[in-house]
Image (tube, helix red, strand yellow):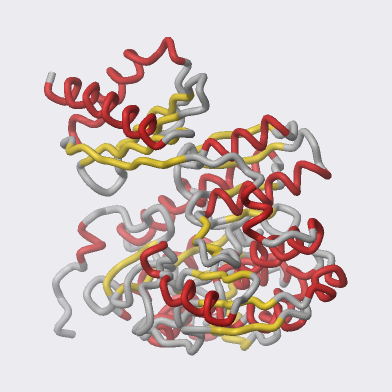
Length: 463
């Protein structure tokens, strides 16, 4: 045991970030640390039935074995569903009536990372208070260690990929999509998205072309985050074969970014706005849950089609929990996460892909045509340095200064103006900076908003 020094993660006294526990493989996430965390998770659940899944990273089996060992040492039974997208594991937890689940994934982080997500019995990530309970068990060394005869069992759970595919298809008009014979290019970034979506699309009568679809935890083709600068291969493939639509996933396939038939990359809140509009046309007056970082276009569609918009802090678990609390049926984020409540209130890349094809089939239009019907906005981003210890004071002074503009203050400050422009000013959760996101119908107006509020913040920070 040469690895004596306490792991970096342990020193923080807080293990869970916004999306589970993440760390560098064998630096922070060692087998020993992982087994101890798993024993803490098992202790939290009691003698439960827990589902285990993992993505395609190089350390997946190593960490899955460590998690499995830690869980059974507490008397929990483990049902190993193998390699799968995160939303597939979340669906399986609920579908198989498990007490909870653990997914080994670092989602869109670079290849040298891995992570651990913990789900409740409904497949949604556990809440912050529940995470604190697990952290307290871990740091207090209170893991349950059962007698030899009470060690849990490990079972293999097969068929979860097929069950998940079937569940997704139940929410769309299969015949309408089949008739269209869409040609779809899928780019799963060498991740687990390749295990479901290409096959599901074939079953929906699509012609499927895949790129970067061999699972490889070194991510040789592109970084696993589906940002526009990482999707040039997908754009090139779309143009070369004149496909109808392209979709790119992150490493664990819970987020999806689309490319229309002209080769234009569409940011997540635009495709979410399409799903929102379609949803509100049949379910007027329903609540739509979205973080304050989402585009003005989401607000426009809600106003036009009678939806009730609920703004949240930035973070996918916040969206899921708000949806559960309000029994809302739809949520979305600008990064390509869509939460389709009738299926499950979590981000789900395969479900989002099926919904977009369903809308194309229903409207009998190309993706670019439907998107062109939406209001267009120009986005300007910027940031300013602000020491962490000043962030709270700066925020309070900013809120006081803009009180007359009726700000939304759930996460930073969001302001809307009469001429359909808006700005979000929020402190970063990870860096000593404030971020600015401004939107307007004219690019210059968005730039002017950033300049104005950057100036205001500069004065407050230095006052």
